[in-house]
Image (cartoon, rainbow, N blue to C red; front, top):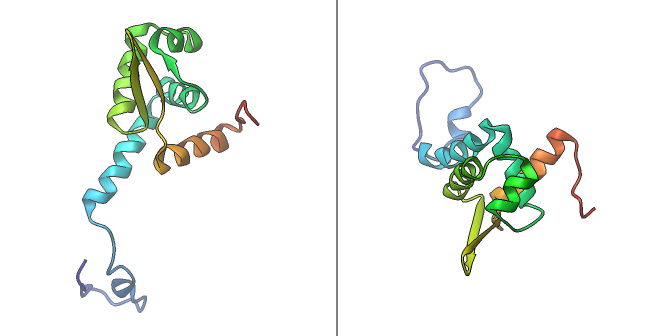
Length: 120
């Protein structure tokens, strides 16, 4: 961001401090991840996949949802980069991605809901 002369000078010198503010596209990445937080079932599936690697059928049973509904949420989570998948024969297995974003979201969910990892 280039130096911007603000219309009102309030003595904060904020224009100098924000010279390196990221572009809107960089904030859009954050917004896309936060969109995943708009559905409690999706957050629950993501949280589950932070602790195990499972197929759609087992995820469906664990979260008591239909396979098509779970598949829909998995597609959105995968598109946002929060989960990854791999195929083993006819089965596709899903788990949380190893990204910093997925890790931070996992910890944020647990702090907000005040739950702890099963492995702790």
